[in-house]
Image 1 (cartoon, rainbow, N blue to C red):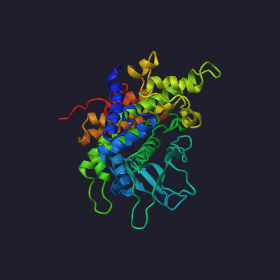
Image 2: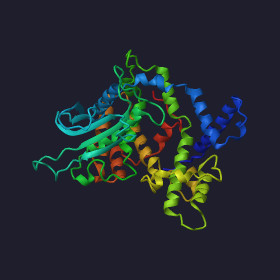
Image 3: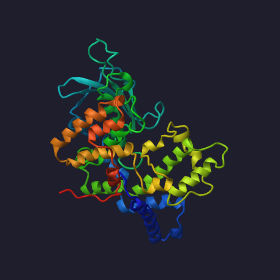
Image 4: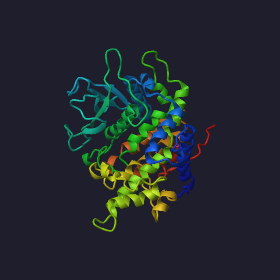
Length: 422
């Protein structure tokens, strides 16, 4: 589908005007001509003034055990699976590592996974990730009749519990540990709930780069679903639920200047594609010239002439995302870069796919438990089950009944009007 995005581009200009107005109200001499370094500073000050959420005050509401209980319960509701501790069934590499069994509705094991949750700086790298131990495989069956069950491992870097104080998780910002564990569990679900028993296309194997983040980003959306969030957000000492006004602030903060942040991602994606498909070494343009040209079209405030952002853009040079950075957000197609950014958003990838998939549940009304279970079952039988055995677009159409649309992503980011539900 095609949509005129001039309104969305106007919103990005409005972000800058809002920063100018706010900085002026704070007596900033630079208010009428904000530079790049001013944008970040005043954006953070504006966000604080609007939402006033203290991360450390949020932590007591997100104890690790409560978050995991809520996550496992969500998986049961959506996908009809039970996740039970299976400690002792398999050897572990650290006393804090847990081993779990995933069972279907009949109580039969269908998968297992390790979970290594806590930070160990001396022996464990930062970040969070999921990977396979073994995949579902008919060929490698031990008895020749039933396929070998998949086993996954999830690794996070939560703060360990200290004494009587449990591990408490962050919810906001880039380092949101709650969103991270939901994200990695989405990857694990695709690995564990696959029905492809040929190892090379089972689970996460063989899934095109464009769609491999669909299940993980889909699960992140549930962090902001009211019932799910309130089920995990309990003060570890008092049992008190997260105050309603704080929940509403979290929802509002989620879309703060989301248009501008999306535009940054579009700049990075377009620059990556331009360099890896059209750039001619020793030609008339340097890589920095290309960056300047792309940025003049994709940014409200173009970079400085001496900008050397590319020197630190590790994703597309040393991080495995060469010509694939677009999978972070979306790929846009048009006859020119101006058309590409402003008018035609046609081919949509991981974040668009995940938002559109989640909107299937919104369309059914999230309070309708029967409908949610039915759609969850369909998601399991398509997106989670088919792995790399079928093209992602075909899988999505099988789930959604149509090709993907950017509507849900734009709405979730506050860039489209929200239709009130009655």
